[in-house]
Image (cartoon, rainbow, N blue to C red; front, side):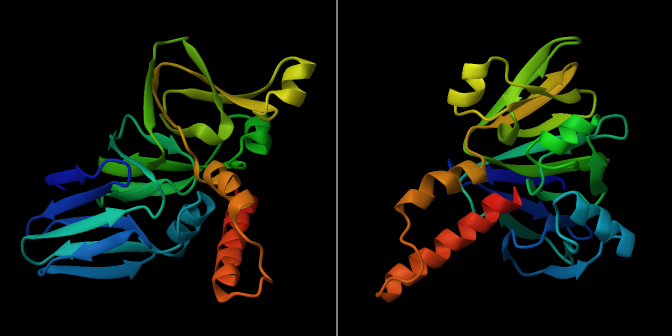
Length: 249
């Protein structure tokens, strides 16, 4: 995509300006609007196995493709608070992401599942054994919960990140899981048992408010299903949905 603009502050959207003949692919459910001259087509993005690979990486089985018959705009956004981050993907440098952060990209980007570099990382890393891999050539956009914080790690430099707060990192960065040290820290720190341990060289993006943390913080204030009023029932249903999201993570 030749032109794009990220708009908004904490609830951002990306506006893609497409010329005739250009295309953009997007995760299903994130399209906000299309102007005249743009056509939407939903498909597996390369066959059944391509859909399976995306689904294993936390993406949708189908992908939305927007093709420009004439000049127009396509707008995409995530349904949760956060920032949109641009990623440059090249044949030499891909990205690994948490599941469900992909928003949209140039059609030259392939989205698939990638196993973590150790069994421990896959078993305890918060996002399961599978990460989302972005490879190919072009621009990609991800949605990062809360504020996006960038670290540029030099060769051999390391960073420990709470597993759910890890958003994306370049394929040159090595990734492992380490247990929190100290009995008191394990019991009382409130940070869980594991940190993602990343070693450079490469860029790492972390998110200040991952969706599961947001859901956890809201649950105590949501009425449970079974109250008398319809409003309470609706709020309880929302609580159930948030609970399902937490279990999924």
